[in-house]
Image (cartoon, rainbow, N blue to C red):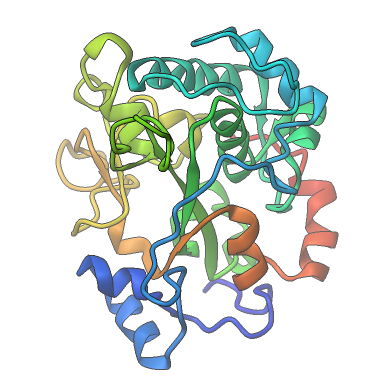
Length: 315
């Protein structure tokens, strides 16, 4: 039994946003959420357009983030004279290339830990050299925005049992639901660019990293097994080789530990839809998502847990 005492006050067990209804894909938990009338990130019928602007979390103007962008190297036209301005938009192929480089850099340089401070600014994550999957995804978003690639997030409430393989002896204190900010990226020229073609559709981080490879290479998921949420590989690393899907059904992973060659964890693509309790819709930034729905843990729980979990590495 997972703990419901750790969640922020006011959040129900299963809530759903208008985005879940709009997509036509709902789990049982999402349907309950619609019944209780909790709204998602689609406001007044308008879908959030994302942004390249810095935020408190995605503080790409900070010198540490700027240094990372310089290390990743130029991938387009010369940098603007104003060091605080985003880089000129790249063509989609070069955008894909630089974001794949950024993901590889983050995987190698930012040690995976179980930090519970989802609102920690990217610059602080880089200074510490460690971060949770959520924090490392935020680093990728910040880099994307610095390169002129608009980003937004989809809020998902994920069943805490998904993390049982990580904490086999501490299941009773695992939160019953985890708020996940799942990034999306819009390749091509930003909307409104004069004389530019219409921007491409939004791509989830999984579609970007596993489904689209520089030079048209093969998908990583076709060469390796699905994500099992166990061992040293985290969700962030798995994105480069396995398609992570939160919408289809039924779930294929994480591994059930049966040792068979079929069933849970056997497929190349990792379908995690059965773990989704609610779809909170799209938001222009993770800052907006957390301000509206809170973080996974309440403030007191974060204060107590962070000194320990913020240094505990994935294993």
